[in-house]
Image (cartoon, rainbow, N blue to C red; front, side):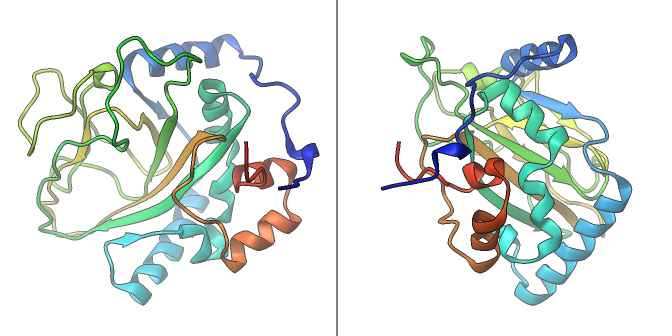
Length: 248
């Protein structure tokens, strides 16, 4: 299948500043990274409004193919503060895996520990060093507290060669991430993580934009009208992110 070769990056890996290199090393060791000032407060309000309207239409906890729901979500595809760090970790040749949102209602129970990838982790890695292969980015639109439910992670568990336990037992080294609107949390798809129960009286809202190595299969088809318009008229980077190279 033919494609526009001009959308391919000229270099596989970006040049890293000392600060980016420190962040990459932290992420590789612990499996997560908190980005300060990832989006502005105006952008927070923009996404909140778009997600509230989306939720009123669907009345479902999960929204899949988020970029098809509202043009106000489109900037999250290649948002520089996040994409720069994604490329620093995965390299320049990356693709969107999925764009989703979650609205967690009051009374929602604890989630079980899980990984986003279905296969086990080999402690020796892979022949071409392609771990991590998938990184999720959570934009939390409401301040996370112990009442409405933070995101819980087990730092370093992305290297564990076995799946997480069933249910939600406590780990002695688990970390509760109390993210604030405007921050973003990157986490390795193989990191043990879960959402804690929402015991507050308010919803907990988040957008989850997930990236991967470009030669991996994406979960979304990227064939809807809004995404197709971006693929046809967007930048070379946007086209690559949306599967502009259909076969590798």
